[in-house]
Image 1: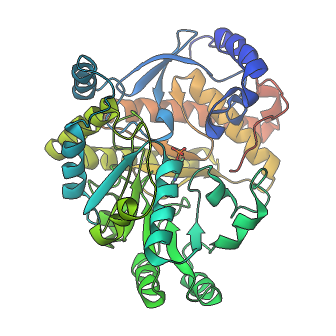
Image 2 (image 1 turned 180 degrees about the horizontal axis):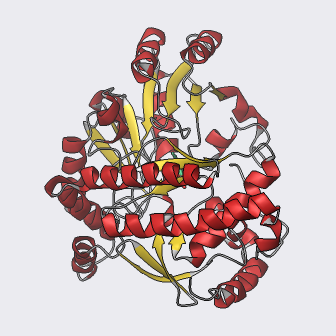
Length: 435
Ligand SMILES: Cc1ncc(COP(=O)(O)O)c(C=O)c1O
């Protein structure tokens, strides 16, 4: 193994950042304290394909990947060429951009529920738009939701203990139900009978595989109670299948939201669905944003969707993910470390479960540290994202690094020296975590 990597420049920037930016980051999951602060890179200076370089000059195979939007790889030539070509002709106009039609047509062709589409930016924006459309269409107010839909008031009002700054009254129009539990959903639909506008969920969320028949059951319950079904495909979209989780599970929702995989990293969100429902978005609701027609992101999306249709992107992502999941499980067993993969190959989650939860967390931190030291970036618990640019070579390099890292960990657990091996810097957490 090479000598200990330096993260000095990263730490220097981060110390400056926390004086100006609360928590040092714009994204909860990117906060430096979520990883192995002091023994893990914080700032990137470039990335290419499956690899990323930090500001200290170290290169890594990246599985964090901007938290999901990169599906083809960094600096993917077709995407960058499309962005450059559009850039020469302007970023955003007061007139409409023809590329809006190309992206709309591609989404309608690829996504089963999409008969009409609207473009916005991030995930919270599109899920909030879906809620407005559902309430406007049904004339009902309550939303039953399972999972994270973004930071907006209307969603955070559901999360007990996380609703700081959110008016209490919003809690009256959103309620939760238990994941993968049809009885829980039925009970909530009965409790709010005649008032539920929309049931929303992320079709492969929660980190585990979905029980057979679950999505069909949710669809039937929505129909029975007259509620719209919305899939948040922000993680599953353009990752599980060309048409997202709805294609993979074979169940068509009334509305769906996309944001991450659609433009290979450029900021674009899509809310789409049945034409009759979507028309509400223009007929009698206000859903209007300045940047929806921003043409660089639309050009990137158009190019990404051309690649998705022309090349075996999703087959490759599944195959690489399968190799990694099997390899992680095998190596965990080989070293007697309780590391297990769960969920689906394109975006699996991982658990490390010792009886002592503190030991589990420390071992996670040590794993992040040791893998970074060997040139691989993982995220605590996953999701482990893969791209079309992660090939066999990257998977094998990752598993070789994991083999060595787990050997270090197994020995440290045996000797009781996990804490001694951590090179992390202790800090007070200043960014509210909701994970
Ligand atoms: C399933 C899901 N929905 C919604 C969001 C919110 O997206 P954004 O952070 O772009 O607002 C996320 C973000 O991670 C997500 O994973």
